[in-house]
Image (cartoon, rainbow, N blue to C red; front, top):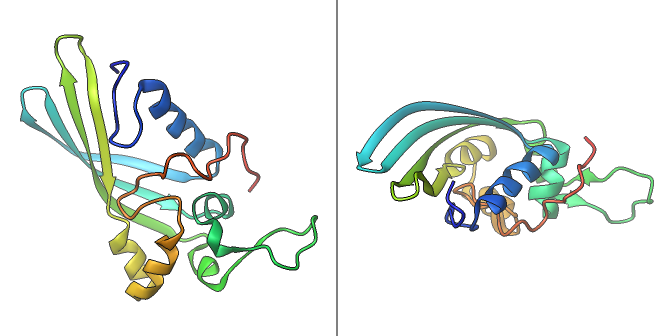
Length: 161
């Protein structure tokens, strides 16, 4: 990757790799399956993907902290999910998405790597209403197109499951 590569959210190979590392350390159970590759133009490639993700206790805490209740809990008690969080817990979602690669032939490296996924469709199927989907993503540290919000909430220390 080019030193100034971007994924549309962060810049630099180290920052992109750090996002991937933090995802794996924080209980994000993710399985990525490329389905199709298509050359769009010289130096531009689009990969269509299917990704499955399980919402674990750890990923609920890290990505949807507003759905985890803390009130009136003793320090040694585990956090419990809210009723909406409980509906998400241990659910496996199948996400359609794409990864767009732009190649810089002058340096022989990837200059841009941008991925998007559709979280709206599977969340709506799971929760049954747009109101509940809106409540889930209102204070989430993840957007409906799968972007992390500036590493907020993704701890650098692994969370226990």
